[in-house]
Length: 412
Ligand SMILES: C[S@@+](CC[C@H](N)C(=O)[O-])C[C@H]1O[C@@H](n2cnc3c(N)ncnc32)[C@H](O)[C@@H]1O
Image (tube, rainbow, N blue to C red; front, side, top):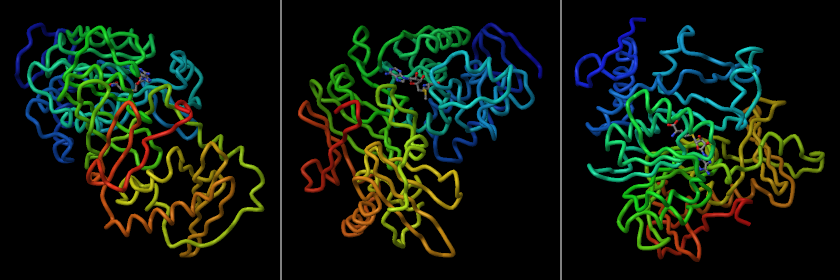
């Protein structure tokens, strides 16, 4: 790979940064931009230019890739490293909040763990940045600095002095700052609990959260000027969604669920119980109620299913997880001990369920309601946030069809 270290910044066939750049990286970046445009994730010329110019590889000198037995460590210079960096793929950079995991995996081979930081899938990043609807001069707060790549795109678009980015993890902030500096950007990049916003630089025109929330932190609306926008994803294992909320004065706002979807790892305080552990802890299932259903599991849990968002409204904090003992079976589980197991067998769908609530009965009732409402797609729903509560509604805020935006354990 040919390395170039060039000083001045100018638009040319070779993207130029003060840090080291590679011709290969420029080519890969252009290819990625074409992929994002084809996928309809990217169309705004200003963001196209930012994706062409900001070097994702500077933010990803090391990451994990899934391996049969866990997560394998990849480093800059490994075969295929650059191609992986510029694929439209999420790249995990931290497991279990542990900064030492990567070195352990590099030394000893793949390790188990739950991702706690990643450079998100570029298509999702592009969608969220476009949905943020920034204009020149806007001041943006990003919650979840992670690697710093998304902050760099914001710096490229708006100027670093207009960008604040916070992460709850001091190690991540340190490495993000270093990578941003290598690209010539010095935004306000601080260790802070983003659930509190970041008061020192408020008010903002835009708040963008690159982790998912179970409900909207009121501080974000309080710190956004009236008429400004908050863009975030909902932390729902089933029926997650991307929302854009217009801030009013104080901790108030109203917005819409967007047609384009986005899924992120949760804000640290909004994490849910590990569904695999919940399944492992289920009591003897021999007394479970059993029956048949006409619904394939994909209709309920697949992000491409039109019903999935509505199903999630009725099943907050319920997680789908594959049955480790049967690849044709999927569990739905909740931390209260409720569970359902859906299994495809010889053209039939069999369901068992147990625990305090019958989750599959809830699914069937939700499906009937959704049909009776005309099978609404996700973008017919909206969100209202007030100091008295937060809710999702169908079509209009005063609709008779409303659901609390709730209620993970952290809020109870
Ligand atoms: C998907 S990553 C963000 C990706 C990042 N924007 C990038 O471009 O690399 C989610 C990040 O949210 C951070 N996070 C989780 N809870 C947080 C909180 N309460 N406040 C700030 N950051 C938080 C995590 O540490 C993690 O780095």
